[in-house]
Image 1 (cartoon, one colour):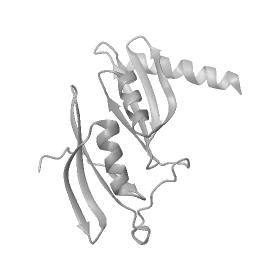
Image 2: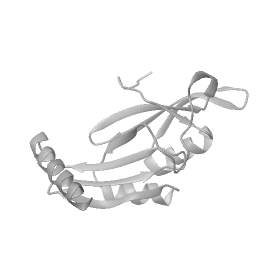
Image 3: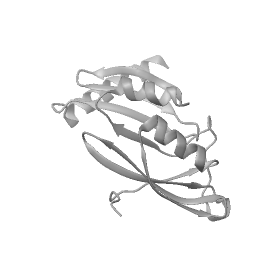
Amino acid sequence: MDLSTLHPNVTAADPRAAIDFYVAGLGAEVIDTITAGDTIIHSDLRVTSSRGASTFTVAAAFPSEGAVAPEPDGPTTGSFTLYVDDADDAHARAVAAGARSTQEPGDWFPGFRQAAVRCPAGQRWFFAQVADHVTAADVQRASDAWMADAGSAG
């Protein structure tokens, strides 16, 4: 199997619906699906962009094993960022497939455009369009400015 070194595991209340969304909304490819009866206990998916490919697993919740699915509007303990060629297009595709927009596409600073959604399975997904010239220092300056604005709003 050709799986990425870091291979996150996504727990979903309805893994079949989650996989359908990831195919339609993120352009994911299903590599394999493993079931026990009617329950998807493991699946491997791949998302690909001009920046490369990443893989992840989608599986049913198993609370007795500590694997619970997030509520669609509840808190999450993590999120996923997809580096894309067009954040606007990625956002529109995900929303058309059933995701809820949590951040409309916008420029964070020149060369860095971002959007975000909550997928029907409750996971947070960011779509980042980043120019090759953007550096960590650029991101730090933008983060500092964002925090200063957030602090003055409170």
